[in-house]
Length: 188
Image 1 (cartoon, one colour):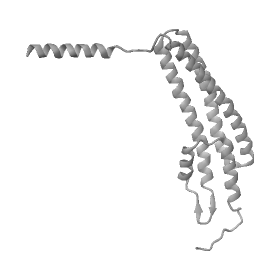
Image 2 (tube, helix red, strand yellow):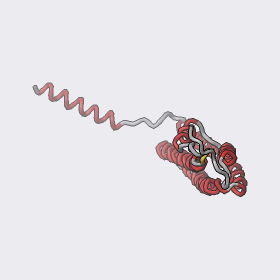
Image 3 (cartoon, one colour):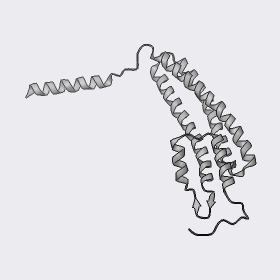
C-alpha cells in the first residue's frame, strides 16, 4: 500500500513539473516572429491603400445615388479605424523589436496585431453588407421582394468589393419601378 502511494505521489510530482515546463520556440523563433509582424503590417498597409481607393469610388457613387450614402459613411468609419490600427500596429512592431529575444512579448504582440486586423476586416464586411441589405429591400415588383437573408448568404460565400456593391445598387435602382408608375396588378 505504501509503495502504491509513493508511485502515485512521484507521478503527480512529475506531472506537475512537466506541465510547468513550456517551450517558446526554437533559437530563431524571435527573428521569425518579427518577420511575420513586419509582413502582417505591410499587408495591412496595402489593404489600407486599396480601401482608400474604394472609399473614393463609394463617395463618388454616393453623390449620385443616395442609397449608398450610409454605406459610404460606414466604409469611411472603417477606413478611419484601419488608419488608426495601422499606426498602432507599427508602434507594436517597434516595441516588439525593442524587446529583442523575448519571445513571449513578440508572440503576444503578433497575436494582438492579427486579432485587430480581423476586427477591421469585419468592419469592412459589415459596411458593405449593410449596403447589400438596403439594396435587397428594393421592390422588384408588386409581388416580388428580395429577402435580405439571400443577399447576406451570398455575401458570406464571397467577399464583396465596393465596385460590386455600386453595380448591384445601380441594377436594383434600374429594376425598381419609378415613383409614379404602377406595377402590373394582375394576379397569376
